[in-house]
Length: 167
Image 1 (cartoon, helix red, strand yellow):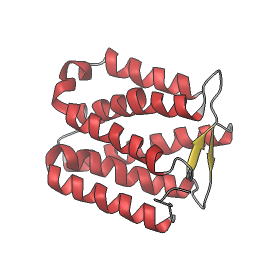
Image 2: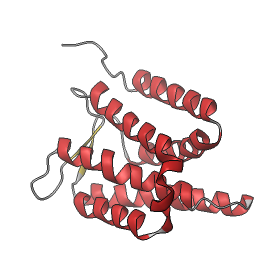
Image 3: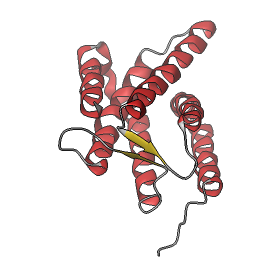
């Protein structure tokens, strides 16, 4: 299921005109992937959510697929097709948040993702609201996007009491 989702996002990114403009969004694609790697580094022994993928994938391989395929493809598609009209921007933003929330809900319903330490689908929805807003902000006003990212990471580390020291 996770593998199929990754392949669908990759296919969509390659099949659309978005792939021709990947360089325009490359820095944001890298940043989002880096943030996902940072989560895995900081939470290595204290996972807030963990994947239980199908086929021969482990959490590590599933998350690496998400890091290097799903997330960059999603960023590329999200920014490439971002509308110009104010009302359309809001609707578009909510569609992406709802879409990612739905994907995660399905993954959770089928046991492909598990939550720990108080995380749940509602936290994921809030996370997606922050993530997609920050993705756009990183593209248009980098310093503000970096500040929102930093504040979000610090908040989550403190709120979830992620241990930053070794055992």
